Length: 134
Image 1 (cartoon, rainbow, N blue to C red):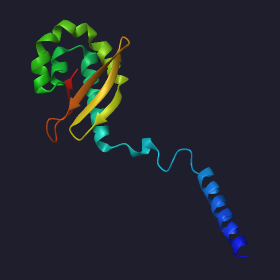
Image 2: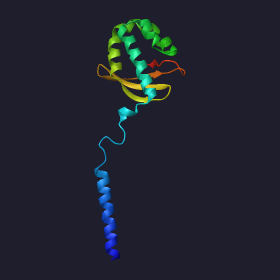
Image 3: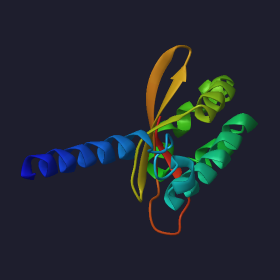
Image 4: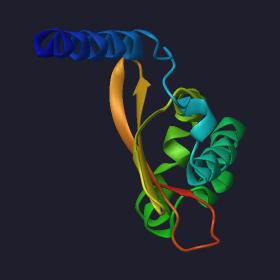
């Protein structure tokens, strides 16, 4: 009788495991789109403004979308690459997130078949996200 009880328990456990694993939701317990980090939403809103600055073709607007250090580094070169702003704006619209923290985010973009890494930072709490590396 003890042998039969052992086989019964083993069979019941096996049936439970098969049923449990076979009936799991395909989407998992949470859907990624439902759990978007508020900070990521904040970055996305700022990036929309930065994209508009590049689409405008206005060098002053683009400079205002850069951090102070980036504006210092790239500011005088922007006028010479103004014709590339629309292409950069299009690439920003198709960006892929690599990593983000509370004050820093990196994305991968593709321009003319080449991949580039760009970065945004938020200099201090309450400020807008700015382009720091391109």
